[in-house]
Image (cartoon, rainbow, N blue to C red; front, side, top):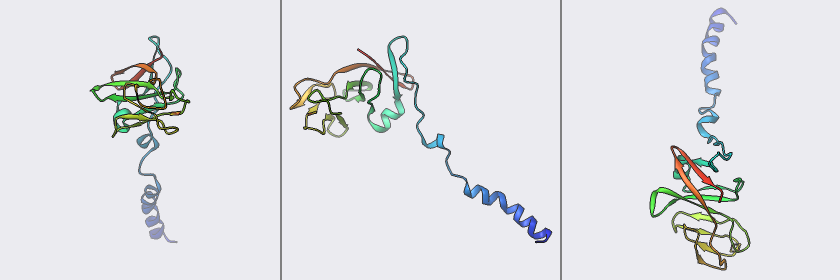
Length: 144
Ligand code: FES
């Protein structure tokens, strides 16, 4: 290889290296996990408002106070509702359906309103509720 060939190789190397780089860094595509440790007022973050609005629900089975699901309040889209996502029939995890605006249990078919009240059994008791609030860009839930 002569000097001209070496120069061409050297000038094309940055282009070749750039082509091998991923187009997005992990921080562009992954959601940053919020600090979910309880604060002095008893509230703990379960996610961001952006996550809630994008997915329609924030579910956290490992929330310190119990399994929780947070949705926007269908009666007031500026507010949120947080329920204990453990079905009161036999403990399966309920799933939020944004189209029907109901929590549904995949195990035996119970359905619950956004406020946790039962619309269809076999569950006879409503889902538990948590206090929830939105503070800046965080969704915060408090143990009862
Ligand atoms: S556990 Fe939910 S309906 Fe049975």
